Length: 488
Ligand code: C2O
Ligand code: CU
Ligand code: CU
Image (cartoon, rainbow, N blue to C red; front, side, top):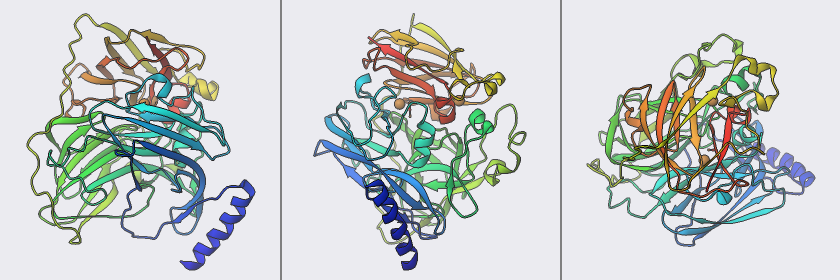
């Protein structure tokens, strides 16, 4: 252990000198207890700073992988806790050697503050922006949204969770002790080479179907287990993967009590057995551990292998996660922390969406990935309504304050559609009723066939700092399955 650390430090110092910057380092002890990202609570200060830097992380064994993180985290960034109803002075500093843009996914702020691809932060530069937050409490996130490089940046670690809080979760009867009975779980899948080095080497198949890996990271950790008190435990789940869709469940058969979707609380907990979570989506669930027995959070195989099937092009590179269910996180019930909450709340104060969209403008959105895409340029492989993303072309303008109905169709496979600067209500899925996980307010929805949504456009966005709408399979996004709109 000591030897490993010293060896790491030596190589890190050499690299750090070369780059002129310190490179933090973290080695992952095996079978360890899951760590939360550090909590950066800005609810009273009203200000936070994020600094992105180069680092190395040993995910498996002693092999270090080149990674990126924020605020001296070697991979990912701190969990930001922000007041749901007050302005916060944010700054993002770039200590990397390439530009990146940082988007607040789920934050309802104007286009100029949204951190999309039109707002890159150059190396050594600092972006200071006032975020005037006024929305219901929710678990949202931040991640790189850099033109053509989002997939690579996010897999390298440029992401983190944001908790929008109104300080009233104790009144709601919800677990609130960060990392104890209120766990933040960033779920991602990665590929590693034989030596344990993380690799991102998307081939044609990955650019078509999205990049999936066969090793699961939770908060950037491989093989860690969570230890929870005997009682009700809250999991704030973020699918921060580039492309993998999870079907989350308890191995012991415990029910998942869904209390919040992307944009905030439901009116009451909804019980589900399997929670499908697509890239970009968040969900908060409560699980009852009062009987004291251990469990494992598991996932079914990726349901999103498309019409071509899972095996056709994959060859040997698909791991076991493609074929069978797999473990996400072992959960052990410990006695270090006293039970705090033993009963599920009967109701929550979330307001369920009920948009009246009579006479609303209707827009048809097709997420296309034609087979001819393989022949095209890397950034023109995918498209929306036949047009690949073009930074210089506004796709449409919406009048501020209106509600529109979008009918979204996904080709070939399921696509998680995300829209910036808005929240929406799912009205129907394939002409039928909305599944329980999609009944709350959403900003990202898995389109598996055809989905109809009602979208409320309240935040302004100018034509030169527009909002994006795109598939959250990041290889699709970088591949052109994205558009942009103004709200005026
Ligand atoms: Cu989470 Cu446009 O992204
Ligand atoms: Cu977003
Ligand atoms: Cu897609």
